[in-house]
Image (cartoon, rainbow, N blue to C red; front, side):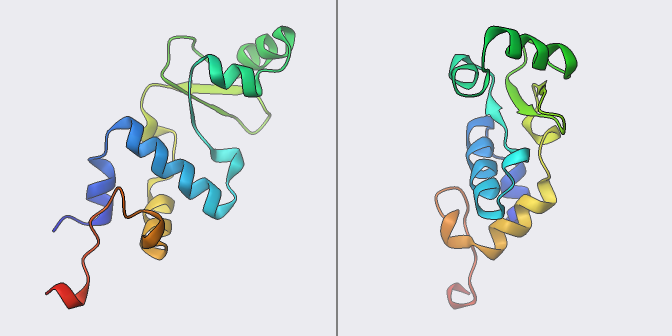
Length: 114
């Protein structure tokens, strides 16, 4: 059976994003949350047009990237590869400590099954 880390790295972007959002919720890592770079994100977090432009200008934001998050200054940081925007080791640690929250994404091996 593949390790949790191997299973995590084999997830598609949508599932990996869902797992990371769950990790952020469990660990209260709201500053590390990653979102789809779409209209819904800007409706929720963009503020005024002026504020959104400021956050994009002063952050590392590219309109055509797939994902967006906040940098340490509240500006937008974007990227196309979610695995480069998240802490994989922290995710694996959280998944292993809270398997009941991640059953829809992972196959957990137990001693009883062997």
